[in-house]
Amino acid sequence: MKELQQQDIVWVRFPYSNLKDSKLRPAVVVSCNGYNECYHDVVVCAVTSNLDEKEWGVFIDSSNISSGKMPLKSKIRVDKIMHVEKALIVGKLAKVDNKTFDALVQEIMKLVKRVS
Image (cartoon, rainbow, N blue to C red):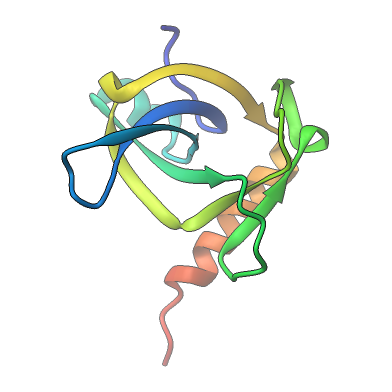
């Protein structure tokens, strides 16, 4: 597989909370390209088709994609950030556009912002 890039939407085998079973799910690569090139892991945010109005998400559909296809309206879960081994990634689905990725980064910043 071609080197993974920031903003790629990829298929990842995510483990369930019991850590014994897994499910193939989409995720957005958020780690920078320098990190992605040097390590055997990437940092991703999970993508879900559950469109409930909870905080900590960025909605996406085909209009937010710069390449590839997004078959369902979905939400990037900024509160589901994971460090995953590249070997668990089985393919690329699409790539989010710059505007959407910037919105994702802003949501992550709100999530981790220090409160005085």
